[in-house]
Length: 406
Image (cartoon, rainbow, N blue to C red; front, top):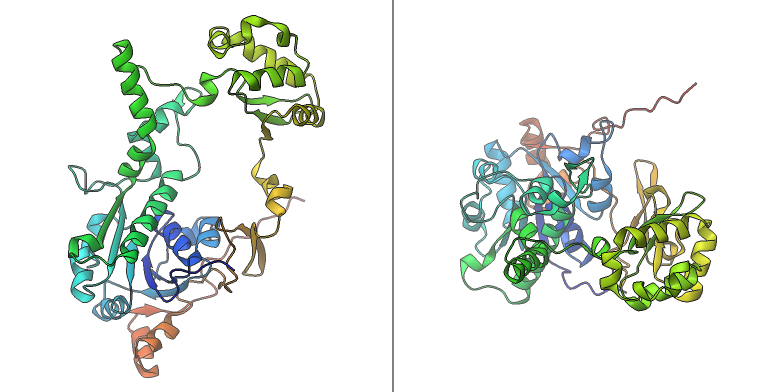
């Protein structure tokens, strides 16, 4: 059984897309109760795939309760503030201007619950750009990642929203630190995590390396990434069209590779050292490509295993969960959502035996939470009639039918 250090803690999430929902997903795995607050129109991820919920909602919002509140109404903001008064943590990733407009900025929340931990994941933390908007790819572009990732010469986002997810993880670390030793000063309960600052921290190795080269060589020069710095370290295609990623980093790795694939270069002393292989990069790369492309994937991997060469197959998404390592007990959680079945990867570490709720529909727990806050049935009906809150509607956010060919 996994330890649940946050059992009994209530976290209010006002999140959209990835960063805040990912943070509260982790907090839920650690035992916290998560209440997702959405506007009547729902989180953006509810309508991203053919008019219906995306994988983001399914993967990162199971285990949460959901209440739909119209914060633009007086009755709605009153409900929200009553909810805030019961919470230990409030986390959101609204734009700063939106947070102020909706009256959920740090000062607004502290006035209702002075002891709450307030966490705002935003584009930029304090500084000249603190009110500017930023998304995951903006953080990639601004911190050097995108310049290195090009498709047909054009700087391009990585694809997965890693900066969002890292920002969410950093938020969890800060929240956990605050919960471990309750802060005494109000400012210590006010946590800001910027996507830009997250990107800077992630790039710190590369930024320091570039500065090092500049001072040693007298000119700006960044350190090459691992696979570009070390010939033979990267992806190569086998004869049957499958890609294998080779972990050839050291001189010992090179010797094992050349012997495993019976390459002519195994007897060439000129290539024994990494420095020499770098000087003959094109020759080394061509040699490895030739060796791998001359064998089927099964033959390549059998030889690599025999000689202890590190490798993995470059897996397409549709095959990732077929791997025996992924199928090992404790790696995946079965979820049912709208009659569809999903396997979602578990949070790394001991697996929680907590019985998580399926991903919630918009407003699924609105009445339940209102009643918990002390509202009578008549009060609930009045709030619904005034559109201050909203109930789940099964007809909303349905996936468009896919028309089968023929």
